[in-house]
Length: 285
Ligand SMILES: [Zn+2]
Image (cartoon, rainbow, N blue to C red; front, side):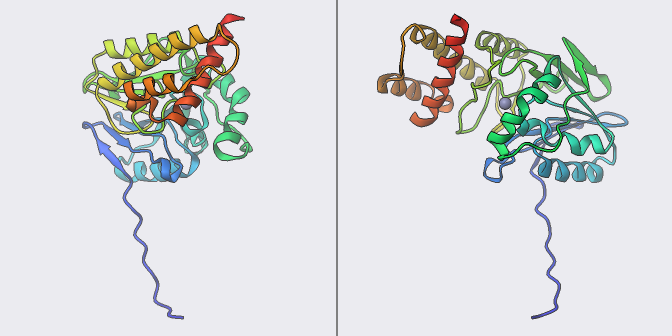
């Protein structure tokens, strides 16, 4: 055994700067830290958009302490799903307040345990849901940031984060830009609300769209996502009239060929189509 200490230099965190006040941390599915995180600097404090899981939250908070030398006053959850909210506790311990759209607190307490089992295999000892909920808009003028509620859509309490001066829009899971597809499975997902929320986002004419998962994108990710959901929803409403398994090879081929970025591949598409069908059947009772 040699007693030479091995110096391990930590990898720099994957941040992209998008203006004087904004940095975006790139999520990574291969590390099971798949949610993108926004770090917005005000004059006296930082606002974080989506917490990711605890491990990522610890590293991001350490980076903020060093790079921004400011405390984190608030962490915003674009919705309650645990890949966006399990890291909340790290920020709460550092003195931050968790913000969510109206209903998000209940959603995390009621539906979070099941989502945690699916995503991390266990229910955490404690959740840290939003303690500050709002409906409509909430502005952080110093940071050039405006939060807007757009749910029910992906979930009940969906929030988008808009930085109008630099034209950057965080859309949470309303749109994705990765090869893993969407999650339409939330029992409170509202497809018509989702389509309206995407139309609202498109009307803001963002220069840069930050989906919660995948690469930074342009407005085309919103229009493509809306077209895909619109067509899949129309198909689901028709198919919901018919009993049994409705996803034919022809349907799958059509969607995968027409929307390769969103329908992705047959297996993932089938999962998405099944969730949509369940949502369509819910509207019929
Ligand atoms: Zn989600």
